Length: 240
Ligand SMILES: Cc1cc2nc3c(=O)[nH]c(=O)nc-3n(C[C@H](O)[C@H](O)[C@H](O)COP(=O)(O)O)c2cc1C
Image (cartoon, rainbow, N blue to C red; front, side):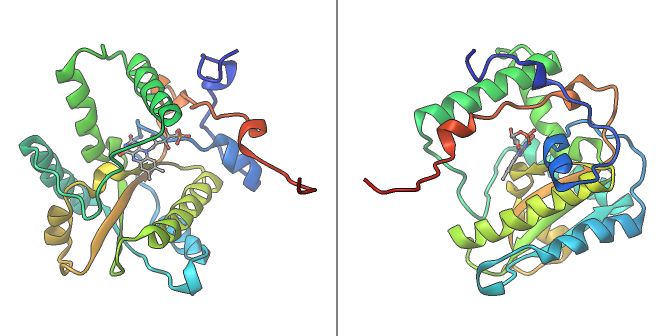
């Protein structure tokens, strides 16, 4: 079977709490429909705070986390949606322009599957644009966070922020929550800076939505496939 064909594992339950790291890894996937249920403040602090233990280059910790909830979340979402409708995205770091052919295939496959589950015809640009805009509504999540850095947004800073982000996502699962990491939330950094009163030295690396997953959502049960470990993990014990 081709790795990209629909497999039984394409749909998994996203309810409940993960009690081991392995469970958190297996039950984590991107959530794109959240319940409006508020996340208690101590849980917000726990998830984003514990994740500060993530590793970073020489312990540089090149991140700051700006979390919006309540009225701030609603207003920032409105401003981002307005910016997205106006269309002029200007991320602080360029989004990848080129990808190897196998990655292009995976990305295409992801789009096809998500649109399929969301009931969107791929040729329907209006429906695709409307779905894209949902990024800026944080997929209805009651909490969104923006990760900024005062460092140059270079490769290693990106790695460090990736370590932080993944730790947040796994801690979220331990606390019964879902997440969606979002490059889209870095598309309009001036809107984020102006709204949060951040100086220009704060570069917006990415964002993440956090909340309780909507349990009856097909979109949420969708589990993306992975390449096999035989293809990607190389254990070398003797050299030729
Ligand atoms: C750095 C990064 C940026 C992403 N940006 C977006 C985004 O803007 N919108 C979105 O819906 N998903 C986004 N995703 C989620 C990916 O599409 C998702 O992680 C990938 O398809 C694998 O699926 P899974 O997270 O469900 O396992 C992003 C993920 C990462 C790691």
